[in-house]
Image (spheres, rainbow, N blue to C red):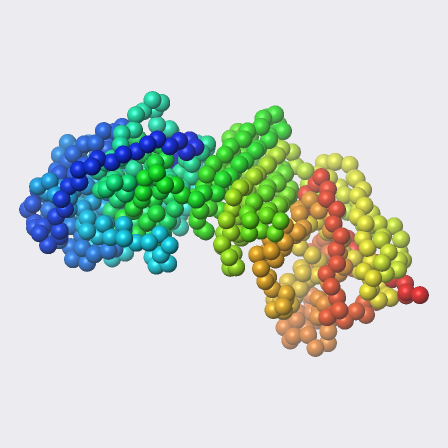
Length: 600
């Protein structure tokens, strides 16, 4: 096995189904490390197939002082029929209790990769028992995984059993979970009619991150049980410290042997409790208590397949993992509903409910087009919104519901702006002018859309330049500044920075959509900077250099030859009008000049 006799595997299965769980009353005596010596023999317990607990032999080779994440490790050699069948210590055996003369010494926890998989290390039970004395709200969350291990016994990617996921969704999970040393593998559900025994030392146990129509969780072995309290794994899962994972029973299909390591393949069963500690010596939990979760409901409609599919899952609350797990679950349903991976258009709308949000909800809708993977692009704002809320700097956000609707189509619904003009060339402050915009849809006939634009009441007489663009496109002045290296010189003043959770929600919800037609006043502040005689040396050099840097075709010679506005930079305020369309505006832009009359 690889570095860790790790049992972490991620599985996707059914919604929470709770059965009563009891623990055997008789508890074994424990044997402290200072009474353990090389040559002592004993037995360990684990589940290899199904739910039946089996035993294998263990011989102590020595004590490795201060080599574990929480103290000493006991070096052992394993043997017997179970070990012959599994090819040595396998990931999933982590937590297997080890007894000498009937006394519990600890849990199988580690091994070396690319060596004899029969040799491993045991975490002493005394270190594991300390997990029960840690308060759940402890702030001493450890960082990193599997510290202070012997040479070559370093953390490796842990196999995660995933139930209900398609191939592309698994690849997405693999990429997103790589930083956590977690690798998903597709598995099925436990066979129908399986009777799960009471959790006891040696039983298979699951640590689940997602439950519902899909399931994602890691498997290991119960080390010790006392009343409604459970110890397992003998090493960290993610070393989150105080945690909130589902604790489940589990079913084992088989063990997969490999040169680097072996691992058990199994399925998550019923939720039976809460894993509330995830630290160096293992994981600890309590039966008949359950974690706070983020409920996610998804509906996907595929126009070409004439199919609608709905899904519901419960995702554990975690600042880093919740956005990734939720987004991957949504992508999975898009893949399954469309039964394909490739180009297309998606209309995505979602609501995230929380009492900490303004009006109790964050709402967003948008359109996306991808020439390669529409499903992966469709989930980007969902992931962004969840990450924004989960990681915000102001206060915890208790997400009580996430409701997502996605409509996908194989067709390409994009359009280019080819022309824009004002219905009137002159206007007074406060007037509304219709801006007529011609769009050329992909392989379609030209259509005209009208965007009403109201001239700000404080606009001074002169020529007002308006820019017409798609909501997902960078503005012309921003592009020009980027070309001249000035895009970093106009940072917002401190007073404009986000001040509350309401600010970041409003900024996210109100930003332009890809299918918006946007009409906005050309940024005078940026124009003044670009044309100022005392511009930074770098900017002046770029502006006068021969030949000049070429402009993109879409903006070349597009600015009319008009007198610059007389507004001072500090007086200019961002003003825009938007109109929602049925197309993703992916190219083209135009400029419109309006003469603003004096106010009489």
